[in-house]
Amino acid sequence: MADLIIITAGFMILFLVQMKRGAVLGAMRDVSSSLFVVVYVGLLGQSLIFLRNFNSKALFYIFLVVWLYDSGAYFIGSTLGNKKLCPKFSPKKTYEGLFGGIAIAVGVVGTIKILAPSFFPDQFGGTAGIAVLTILLSLAAQTGDIAESIIKRDMGVKDSSGLIPGHGGFLDKLDSFLFAAPLLLIYFIVSAMWIK
Image (cartoon, rainbow, N blue to C red):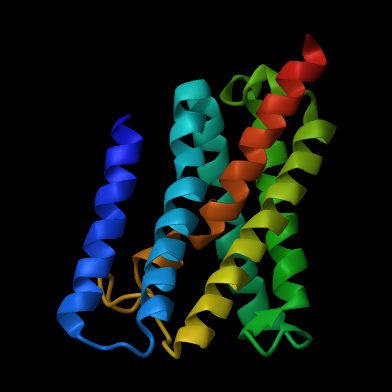
């Protein structure tokens, strides 16, 4: 019931803002954009909360993978990158950065798995299993990053906000998690069904 009240209030506020603006042209575009952001960030981001409630080790793992991948992709891509990954939407992303980020994430996570296996949930299996999962999550993180770039290009902005100066904004820091976290949550759900 509370969800219905929140959704109804949200719709009312969005349309009241449009009424206050007085602009007829573009009103539905503005309302749709606002609703998209709520669904995009709210529903996909909610996976992080579910992961925390499901298994706190999974939350550590997702942050570790995404940060390692993002940092590795940036470092390798900016130093060795030549072949553009998605030049229309994110001109600085390169294939070298993609593969370098994956290699760094898999290498560090694999090393931690070997040296301190208790850091990871039992559902992840052995080192090979966690390596495959780390590759998939790295790819999901990159997809989330490019999805954010597509949204920004469409909106005609460079950064999602000015909240974090020099870092592209809050959503720019969250974008990789918005695709990686739901994938990890799906992994947990499927593995739980499979084990039973």
